[in-house]
Length: 294
Image (cartoon, rainbow, N blue to C red):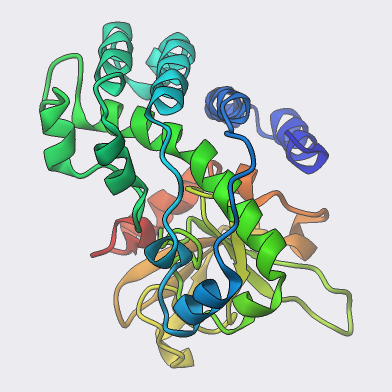
């Protein structure tokens, strides 16, 4: 993990003891994911990629990522093994993780290619075919979490290759709250601290492939409205750094961190797993998280 992630983890552990279990779980997942990243893949053809982005399509829709079923199964098995030690935090039984690892070994190359297509993830039907049930040790939530977490090494390697090939310019034209690389909804936003005169810019972060892209500050990431009377921020006055960007037009929200109020450079990866109190605040106002909005 890079220094920024480590520093932010250490800071939250010191200042917010209640976050220690969820941060330990997240760090466990991230370290396993890093260990299963594939060799650098071929970058998407720049002309094809730019055409897709200009047309409002994520890169994966035009240039699919390579699928490696054996590596995926190994990553899922390693994640399941590590996560079994955190079963209580996830409110799952340890036996379910063994079943998840077994199910991952049955994922074919064709099924993996379908799961890598935008937006990444395994459909409910796919989870059923692998043995997931509403209740019992192998639930939809458990298997879905393990398998989607095992996709990230492939997606993040693809995203880095795309960024290196295309540079920053293509992302400036992207106007969606969904990821320009994989099509997943943004997990969290970050308003950077550009100094007193420059103010700050908002970037959105994708937890699936770890991409970041610029996005207007006064615009809903889900429905795109710019009507300032329908956009508002909710937050606890004791923590102005962490806010809910709420949209009254579509009744959705996105969690946003402000670096100036935070007093340091934020790690979007770390911020993607903190802020449970903001979810509670938003739910109390009848808002739906962007990641679950349909």
